[in-house]
Every structure is written in structure tokens, then in C-alpha cells.
Image (cartoon, rainbow, N blue to C red; front, side, top):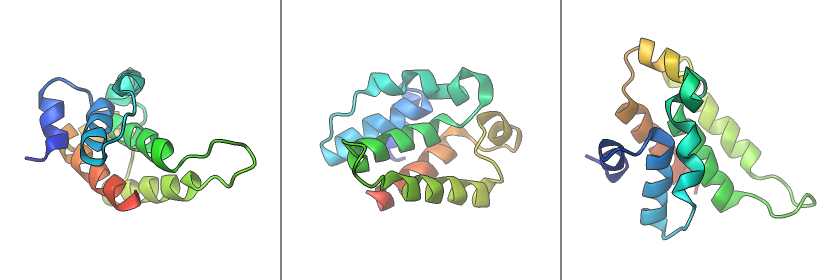
Amino acid sequence: MKKVTEFHKEGYNCAESIVKAINEEKGLNIPVSIASPFGGGMTVGATCGAITGTLMAIGAVKGRETGKEANETRKLTKELINKVKEKYGTFECIELKKKGVSCDEIIEYSYDILKESI
């Protein structure tokens, strides 16, 4: 089992698990609490928490500090969303669950994409 799914089994939501794992693996200090509202598809089955957590981590590592800089995260965001949609047909939490995709599966898949991106 991967560390990212271990965090999920410890009680962290999907988004928190991604942030906590990337912090540990890369020595980052992204506040895990920032991901708390995003589990369960923002608690309403919308965009999967693993995806939003991955996007938070991408923003923390590759994001810009000023409006004058190019936004390099847009390309990475589009790649993540497209890969998830290609594999699962959706990035919505409720739809993923209807298709039988477990949280651990989408957490691992999103985390693998994150590690490739940063």
C-alpha cells in the first residue's frame, strides 16, 4: 500500500491525503488543513477530492507569485483533468463512486500524476 492511501485509511480525506503525502515525500509544508473542505467532492459529490488536492499541490509547487508571471499550472491542470477523464470518464466524486472507483484507486492515480508533474 502506498503512503498516500495509508493517510486516507488513517482518516484523512482524499484531498488531505494527497497534500500530506506530497509534503512528506518532497519535504514541503503545504497546510493540510487547506484541503479539509475538499473531501467527498467538496462534500456534495462534485470534483473529486483527490483531484482538488493534487491541484493544490501543483499550485503550491508550480504556482506563480505575481500576476505578471506566466501561469504554468494551467497546462498541468488540463493534463490531470484530461488523464482522469480519459481513464474514468469523469472527475466528479459521485460519478466515480457510481462507476465503482474506490477513493484509494483515484487517490493513487492522482498522486502518481502529481509526482510526474512536479
